[in-house]
Length: 254
Image (cartoon, rainbow, N blue to C red; front, top):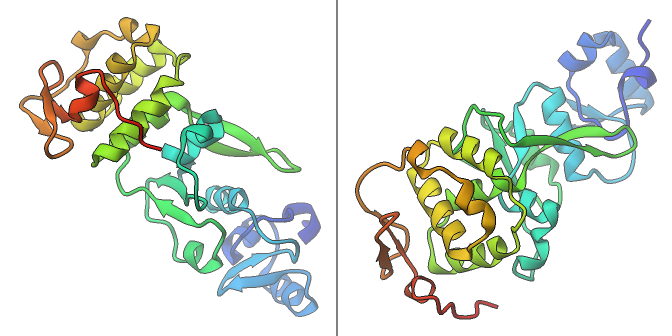
């Protein structure tokens, strides 16, 4: 017979359906609530009483409850060692990709530094470039974008000169990206902007792996794309980019 201690690990957030699927009957849930063995964070969401929650526990709980989510974009880049290229200041929200909108309880739980659901995944439906990173006492697998995927995710959202300059500084430290993985990701990517801007950044930073990406195998769309207003047009990738980078004279951004 299943017991609460055998199925519910500390830090895991679950609902009645999850508990029922793991052998804890509704009457037992009510009993554990009355006795304080579990507590309700919001209506219908339970945990064992314990220390403040960490955001990784929320992510793993979402996965346990059936949500297909992964940590990506700037959050994954920071995890992979690019945080020293990021701007100093307040902690950035956790960038989370998912196939469905996040449930309302995620915002109600109020985890610091909070979550930023990413509305568009340039690689939607393709798990390429997502790896599990163990977390906590039980080595819960938290899915993260690899650096290769994270840079493409980043390129898909860039809209300002400052964001392009920051992305270039970050990519200057990315000397070890894997061209085979990049090739697969770029072929799967559905965002023309992400592909063109990533390739432009890669060419501009001049890392050796760029030479091994076969541009002929990529669908880069047609026509011009304005990434930043007031920029200059790159003739190869047909995007507008900051003039100072295109001319090889980047201004400091920090």
